[in-house]
Amino acid sequence: MKNNEFTIEIKNLSHFFGEKKIYENLNLNIKKGSVFAFLGKNGVGKSTLINILMGYIKPKNGECLIFKESSFNLSIQAKEKIALLHEGFTTYDFMNIKQIEQFFKPFYPKWKSKVFYDLVDLMALNHNQKISTLSFGQKSQVVLGLIFAQDAELLILDDYSMGLDAGYRRLFIDYLKDYVKNSDKTVLITSHIMSDLVDLIDDIAIIQKGGDVYQDSMKNFIEKFRCYKVALNEMFEEKDIHRVEIHKDYKKIYTFEKLENLKELNVDFEDRFLGFVGKY
Ligand SMILES: Nc1ncnc2c1ncn2[C@@H]1O[C@H](COP(=O)(O)OP(=O)(O)OP(=O)(O)O)[C@@H](O)[C@H]1O
Image (cartoon, rainbow, N blue to C red):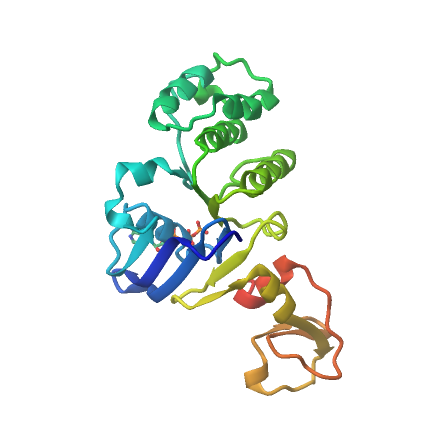
């Protein structure tokens, strides 16, 4: 983290779809130079937040600031500094690889053609191949090339992993690490693939159905949110327990408390995340 400036400020944000509450009075600050992950199960409102941040949806209440400007009314100068990868992003399918690079280039003052071709050429495709004829994963790779080539100050990646194979996903994460290293670039990321993310992320917000949001640094969450394996008949005070997971011969207790005389299990981030939000 480079300083105390915020790239994104979300203030008292509330949003509903009809009767359905997505958030109520959500407050989040995303520090300049940090990687922030917005996590949660399917359908809790991750993409909705990104839609609000990009000005596609007007929230019922509250405001979001990006580079200190209202997200609903961003200037062109601010938009030029944001690269957005949206879930289900479709490119201009009728163009070929070369044409799409040429098409995007004039919109972004800091465009880096080399970055685009470095990424795309890893697939060893002919630059004259039409986007519509690429496989789903190959399309995603072209899209990521278009995103990184923008050299944006703020990267917003909504479910970046769609369709990428394991090798390319890792390559992408390595690219992202380089992108943020020694720079003031800020990244907001949502993903369902947790194992990729742990080393990369500074801060997390875990959103739950009904709008409850947990916020902390990744480091604190991993340190403070504990898992214990205990006998089925062992009883605990409700205040000590975040979630109980019942197995055939034992149960797992997930908690922010340090429970004396119990053996803490060494679980990975994905287990902790699932212990926090529940599996189903
Ligand atoms: N325009 C809309 N009208 C009504 N409901 C909507 C609309 N857009 C989203 N929703 C609902 O709001 C909730 C949040 O949707 P959203 O797409 O933000 O979830 P998400 O966390 O990104 O999910 P996923 O992980 O599956 O991508 C869902 O229940 C969805 O059905």
